[in-house]
Length: 399
Image: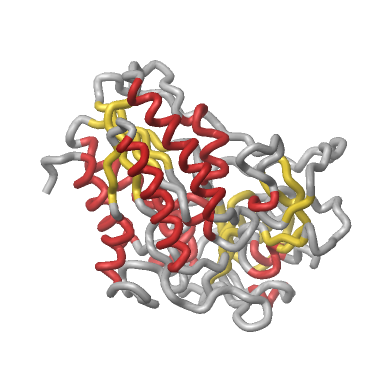
């Protein structure tokens, strides 16, 4: 497959309709595909403004730019039908007609010439193959230099066949948590995946009224594999004396069927490592309250499969199953219970049960107005509701 995704990066600078306004920087007849560009989602929406909103609300943790336009008009035949493409990285500009693109920040420069290949670790299909507990190369990532084989056939996060690749075990950078901007505030560290990122702004606004400063780990904490290897960087105090509150959650990335998949046994061991490191801060006086947050439910809908259900608008991608959510939540709950029995003080925020009640109970398939169709993410109303529930657990006197 060639990245004919050029159709999915271009722009008409402005559209007259009021609903097609967007605060992003817009480019006229210009594509930004190529280089490090990666697709977050391919959608069918009603307007340019809706495409922009999808990027900055429902997919904000995984989207830095978007393009609105008909895929077929530019020959994007290798991807599912769509008129809105969202990206978590963008490439250098080039000319493409009749599409509208928006992006935040600066346009990246042309990519540098490739350097010498880094040494390849063992081949893999997912993190489960990389021995994330003990191996020095613990992360399964794309390595297109490999000759395809059943042992390295993998699917990186992303829609359709665009994520198909060959993979090998390697390492991943972590990033360091930002320092406080208000040392007089109650210091709250939120560690988590896109669910925490989705509610972050609403929670931040709520707890700020109680004198709190919320800091999120850098980017998406993704899976317990990444968390276990990056936690010491994320827990860094900077100029703070301690964390007053730390909340953490992992699960949705661990149980998804793509390169981040790990077994429940591996998940248990990694959660033990994560929990022990946070509890050590608590016992050492560098963290007061600890809250473990349950993984939110997965709707019971058809999952992505290139032969039987290959449209990400109607099929869950990557494939996930709620029975795994229950299994992985149960494993994490046992880790937390054992830590508490050994003297830790860890509270539980049960967002799984909260969302399940909102959406009709076990086995629900749709949750109109609350959760996006065929998706584990939420509508703006859903994010706000989850944020309020999370905040109630954080600030005890909140109603």
